[in-house]
Each structure stands twice: as C-alpha cells, then as structure tokens.
Length: 153
Image (cartoon, rainbow, N blue to C red; front, side):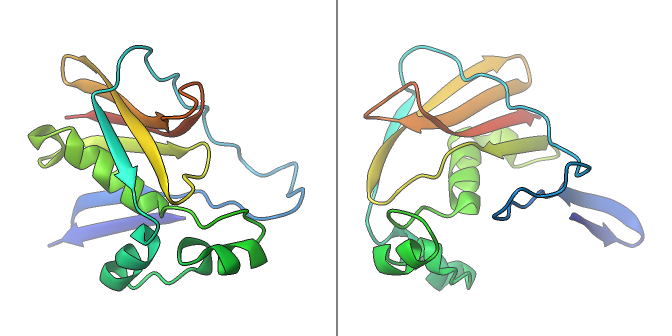
C-alpha cells in the first residue's frame, strides 16, 4: 500500500507498507528487501514493555487489533501472547534517535519478529554521519532481532 500526503500539491510525506497474511501467498507477489543486520555491541538503552502497552497504545491510536490487547484475544489470532504494536516500536525507536528524526528525513522499518508483552528489549544504535541503523533485540536472547530501522536525516 502506498500512502502520500500533499500540501498545496507538494508531496510532504510518503509511505509504502507491506502487509502479511496467513497462507502461502502468491509466488508472483513482490518481496521486500531484507533488513540490514543490527550492529553488535552494548545496548544504547533497555526498555521494559509492560503487559498493558497494547491497550495503552490502542487508547491513543484507536487501533484495537486484538493481537495487541490481551493474551486470550491474541491466542485466538494464532499468537502465544499479545504483541506490541509495530507502529509503537517504530515510533519509539525513532524518538530515541533524537532530533534528527524530527525534520526532513527518510526512515525505513522491518518488523522481523513480534515483540511479545510483557518483555524487555534492548535498543542498539550505529551512527555513520547522517545515516543511522537502529533496532530492537530481545534482552533474553540478543541474537533475536525484533525491529530494524534505518534513518537518513
């Protein structure tokens, strides 16, 4: 899905989203790029995500998808527990990167594994000039990458 926002006919924001569905899917469907590997090394931050994070996000965003609200409703959708909303993890990661994400910039996100609630994740960041590679990994198993974000400010 491609979304665009225009002001006075000028493109000011665009977003391409790829959605997943159950099943084999079409062999002809375009596949997205693989995410870059997260950098090794110590965490730049540790976030404890509470059990009610999905409900708190739903109250603000209006997104009441059952996979984010309660374990029982997530189980009905095929998940062992409820999960953090991807847009929350994306926005929280960008916010942690500082002011560079506030102005004109390009960012990209890959959701590689669900972030189950409650949980603890580590933020890892690698800066190279204006380019930033960041992401979330499991605190229990740092080899498990949940979210990868690139930012070019």
